[in-house]
Image (tube, rainbow, N blue to C red; front, side, top):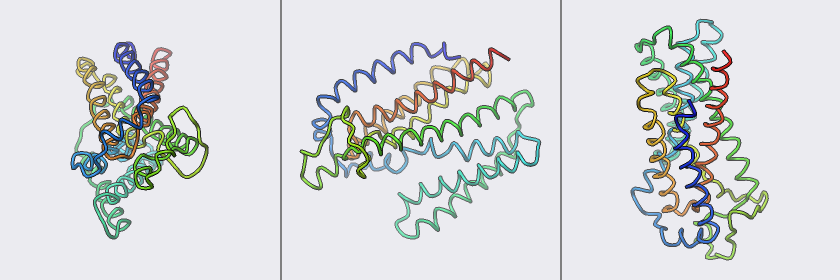
Length: 272
């Protein structure tokens, strides 16, 4: 299946290389030109940009709950669905509820999980699709955890100061280019978590495995995530939260992890 995306993959990495070369010289200048933290469009995507990554566990858990027959495996699916929904609720409450964030987050999250499980009951999954759908759900959960670990690890290691912190302190001398590793110091600009979360939408590239109908639209399974991730990345520059290099690597890390998962899954299919 990965061969279907060969041209897209080449395009993606050409853009990444060009962006990183540009960022090596103009990271700071680009942020100065785009900085507008009051922009409503940018604020909206600050609040919602990571939703693709946050939806993985609620949806995957629901799939596992209804595709497994073993009671213990169903319980595991239920826990993933509800735990992921609580995580999603916390994310929503962080940006949309000023007070009592934890309470609203739990209520919203648990409610969302219950709705997912309730709706899933009425979705008829053909028996010949249950196994592959279950495998994709498991892959999604693994990919999400690998992505979060990779991004957080890089953030702590790089210790890069955010642009908005430079503005607040009026100390632009504290800026460091992306190729300098500062070590653990509390700063977490590089790479962009929002962009990485948005790029979890590249998991749509697994859709063609489900049926021939999706195979005909495999290009959309790449371009929809690409456009969405690019929009989120741009708004992070506008918000002053990240630099061009931050969002480029944030998106690239998620894309590479998804590609690796596809490659491994392709190999498994060829051996079966």
